[in-house]
Image (cartoon, rainbow, N blue to C red):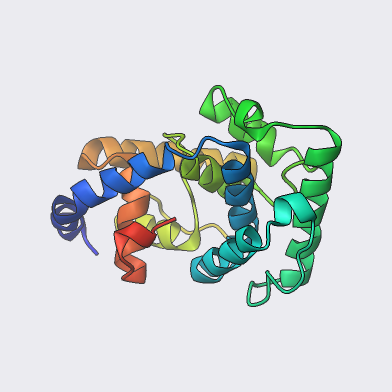
Length: 209
């Protein structure tokens, strides 16, 4: 997709994207935030669709209250490791009496750093998924640098190469380049992510996470 095609597609989907991003701002309760954390752990290096299905199963079985995970994460990539992460995070959130609706607040950049480095409550969330998690609970201005975004940034000339791995330093450098690209293209960074996701997946915007 070249820049003109991108802008044309943005024009068609802009209102849908803005509505979907506004939906994320409604996620404010402890339980809802917890299950978004679960979703982001499950979708890391895997399928968003499988993560959505697993999140629904966890909610339906009241995982936060019961601690019963059973087969809820089946179909998720690296499911056994991710099951351990979710059980670990839940146990510590409960043991420390953490209210996520109060814990997850403040400056988005500072909060992302705190979450990415917090293996007690957010094990399984690195820089990309910490950004994803915060976007999904209504924060703005953070790049979600998955393979689809990186591939498109290279194709659009915003970056020279797709890095083999993303250290904190590399992540922040590419995020700055995405900000510059967004300013020049007129497509806000948060909306660029949603636009590329919809284009790549062909999924209805209402299902975007």
